[in-house]
Length: 402
Image (cartoon, rainbow, N blue to C red; front, top):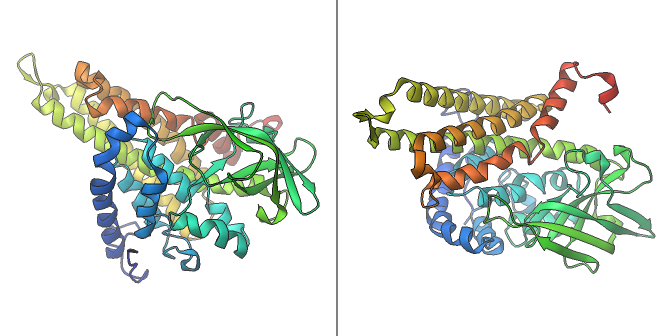
């Protein structure tokens, strides 16, 4: 069943946003799906890890959740990007961070460049089954020696006739053990410049591909993360997304949507855990009164709720710029920076206010505390966001601009 999209010209029901009645109906559909198809299984998936991506994505594909803003020609809904934000916001209702992160890879991290720059044949072969939930995909950029410094990647794709021969490795790859294909960033020309990189679709059943190991993480247990290796792996040149040598640019553009959905998950997740904390403090008596009656406590919670609301509005501002076809890199970087730092503050503060209860695995806060820490590292570390913002503001020393 594919959720219907109403006329995009309908008046917004939330002032200052693009949310119409159709978006709200879509929100209710995602919320029901989370409650019925995901949350009842989260504890089991966290314990037995990873969650069954093929099984869950197939169900999501039936509802049209995996390609809301992609063309109907490839199985998408052909909707605006506000639907992606609705999806990200409602996935914050999942009782862990790992499953929403894995879904986000499928919808907003491994597929945007393919949708925008890929050939029709490439999209029919890889984007369409990803949207329908028939295949799981992953974005393969980070390497053991090149994390935040994307320009330093060493994985090579050398031209041999009408094929690329790929050698190298990738690290910290979400969905890495379950992926049917990868959106791989590799060097296709000599040198160390970012201009010599290309994005290439790599099916994981290709000879020469191996999962070196499944990585054990501090949090996000239900999401599989892997180190991958490529040894004389051959794929057709036709698997390249767009023009050769433009992969770095495509990936930088792809990062922006990843950062938007990350921010959306952050402010919704923050609000959820803050409300949980408020309810707990109302019922927890200490020194003859509810803990919530302490001014320091309710002032701090109020401050954090304010931070979450500001992040929400900044994210909506980015979507408005996206809709208008404007560059929102500066603002998306600000969103991502603020999201990582805010959610760390929320997790730490709420843990402190819960005391011993918050530290118990039986209580939701411990998992949130572990899972949320990744946001300041993944999808571009805080320091990378600061560098991007500094470039846009013209305050970075010229020797560091690259």
